Amino acid sequence: MRVVKVLGLAAVLVGVGAAPAAASPGNGGWEPTSTPPFVIPAGAVCSFEVKGDIVRDRERMRTPATYADGSPKVQDFEGVLVIRYTNTSNHKTVVRDATGSIRVYYLPDGTKIQQLKGNNALPVKATNTGFPGGDYITHGDFVVIDHPDHSREVPVQLGTMENLCKTLG
Image (cartoon, rainbow, N blue to C red):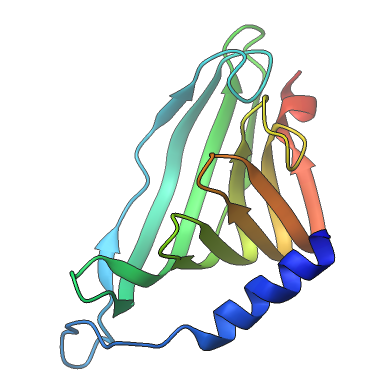
């Protein structure tokens, strides 16, 4: 059943039309963006609280396709992102490169499909049913599906994943 679902979603990806969004001449519509520092409470992703401090951030984003109401249909994110992760209970810290690119498809039913390339941060709730919970750093090519019920699955995994809950635990 999951294979059929993934093949169906792949067909949707191919069929997503690109209604051009307003773009600044010469930069392909790219705009600066950034990831703020964060704290993930104990039990949400890992059994302990995780603090994320941004070490380096030169990200950018664009919206190459929108729906008629102006909401995004497709968005791209890329650029340098380096994060210091800390387990606040034992103070163990690691620095990880999350520099990569992400293309996000927003489907009308609320499903969000993400294509991750390179290195990326991927938190998954501890209570998730589609894929084991954890705070992952991915290396390679991955497809992540966020369902309207907030469950997350990772049907395509071409690369490696580090679960920072294990690394920092």
